[in-house]
Amino acid sequence: MARRGLFITFEGIDGAGKSTQARRLAETLEAAGHTVVLTREPGGSAGAEAIRALLVEGAAARWSAETEILLFTAARRDHLEKTIAPALEAGKLVICDRYTDSTRIYQGAVRAGLRAAVDALHAQFIGRDPTLTFMLDMAPDAALARGVARGGGEDRYESMGAAFQARLREGFLELARAEPARCRIIDAARSPEAIAAEIAAETRPFLP
Ligand code: ADP
Ligand code: TYD
Image 1 (cartoon, helix red, strand yellow):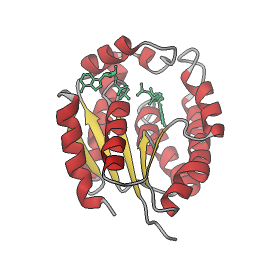
Image 2 (tube, rainbow, N blue to C red):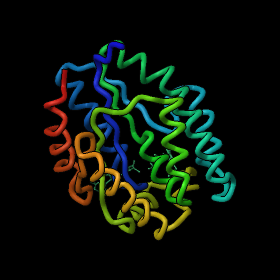
Image 3 (cartoon, helix red, strand yellow):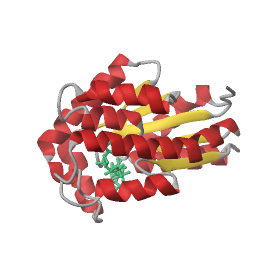
Image 4 (cartoon, rainbow, N blue to C red):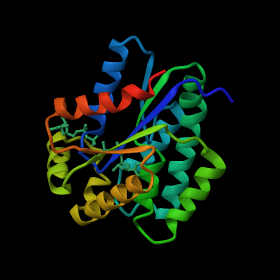
């Protein structure tokens, strides 16, 4: 069970700046000579990208929370098999924009009890956790404004509204506080440069 690489994830509500910061961290680490695989969920492998299209497009009520959990877990399993595990075993650094914490919080927030289902599926079919998780935290209205400004057709989750986003924010914060060894809460309502500098400094002690 060689686990030579380093697995880092970015989490937080829509528009908090995860993709921006994941990309910046990848650039910083590559400039320092590391081999980085930058990836995202749902997606990150051909099969998982096909499942992504089912998940992020269409009406908000298209899938039940139970169906979503199964689809996200199926996508994650393919992503793990095809992309994440091979890269880590080759000693690469894997930076992933969203992972199981998103399923725990988004689908777990829909109804009490679903969080346990997410954890059980993760234990049985995924079984790999990141070493480091950056929780990008900011007020949902400001984050939502960024997301709306960005545009694009993948707005099924954004369309669920600000109250839902506020519950998600609390969920991510609670989860981060419960797992302080893995999670770093990052104030995401600052300049991209300031956030990137903090994230790079937090990552340095974990580098191979
Ligand atoms: P996420 O991946 O969390 O949804 P993105 O990285 O795609 O967020 O950022 C959402 C939008 O906000 C993009 O248009 C991006 O350029 C912008 N953005 C990202 N980080 C910041 C920041 N620190 N300050 C202002 N705007 C930002
Ligand atoms: P993403 O493309 O990361 O959205 P954004 O860039 O706006 O943050 O993810 C698409 C949506 O899927 C996002 O609203 C969060 C949702 N999602 C879940 O509900 N559960 C999950 O397990 C994952 C990975 C994403």
